[in-house]
Length: 128
Image (tube, rainbow, N blue to C red; front, side, top):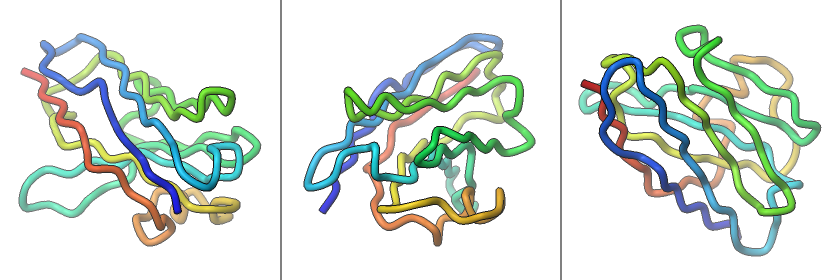
């Protein structure tokens, strides 16, 4: 079993930056996990933001490319999401997710909620 705990959310002005962290614990370390970040606003479906697979290959949603950077530190069992040039439209609850094994072969599958087995509780990001 894998536990995921997000941190780093908060309130920031438009144009600002935040870094989210997701700590991995349990029976498997992050080196064996396909991991992703998702976000959700009330009344809307959860959407994929970014993902990183076992080899470190990254995938991004079009609306965050060039602004967000996902990374994984396997020595610390931690997933990160560096968010720059934040916009009010980035306001959401951000969730960390993990799947034991390789991510799916397509970008769409890597950013699909159905790919992932384990989820954190979320951390709120508010941009005004």
